[in-house]
Length: 100
Image (tube, rainbow, N blue to C red; front, side, top):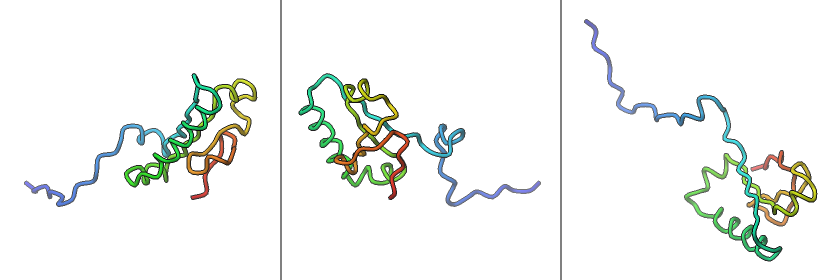
């Protein structure tokens, strides 16, 4: 009977979603319930949070965009109303892929 070798460093477990999807989908924040100033504050808070070193790896793989519900209703989801949290002064459409 052959003995099975034990791996010294086993392969890390793969997340369940990666079995079906090669990439993590975009993360879209739709901001509602506040006026224009509140939307700006929330977008800049997301921008500040994105600088956290603990999130850096995740955010290299996952595009994160934010838009106000008002813009979404007025212009539609495919309009360049989405603001990347790495560059909140820039507006893109939701299919935007960051060049990192």
